[in-house]
Image 1 (cartoon, chains in turn red, purple):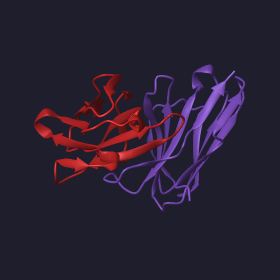
Image 2 (image 1 turned 90 degrees about the vertical axis):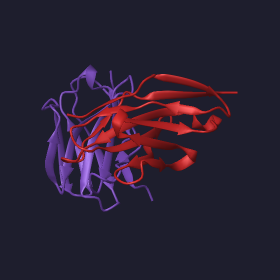
Image 3 (image 1 turned 90 degrees about the horizontal axis):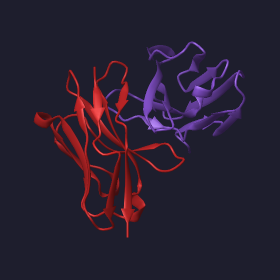
Image 4 (image 1 turned 30 degrees about the vertical axis):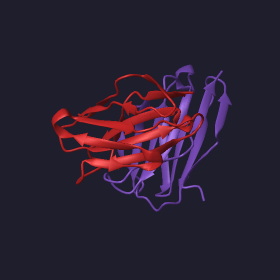
Length: 113
Length: 112
């Protein structure tokens, strides 16, 4: 079975500050890992993914995440927050078998002036 | 061009009614999904179809019946709607497990 834990349902940062959203996973096989962003009243948009290869992956809008197998983590970071980054962020894991995505409970990011 | 499109965007209906949500993808993907997002934003998979065949059914009540007439379409029919069915339903598609899923904008279902 696979599962995802996102620590912190709400994260607040100042504009220009570092963004760090935490994600830990459990998977019985090497996982595929994803971060999605959801803006109000919209669907989910892919930020970045890890499947194999380089453990530091870069995504859209300046976000990146690092796969750390020893820590079973896939934390999302952005060096400098922008007001437009305010949204709900979901970490998800897939391990094949129909490509079922298991989502974390989400982290709402608030960016303050 | 919209990659994954769902209709309707909003659906308000009374308890006990039957309703359908349609989903179409123009990405040429083989696999399509339905997810339910509850009021706390929690997302959970309901169904997955690969080339019109059901491959995932996550203990969803049998009042929910997905139908895939072809691999580009996956519709969701719900019988005897209950208050607890109020949620946002997302359709998604993907080509294979290593590729990300593409999501529609969701259908917000409200039961009165």
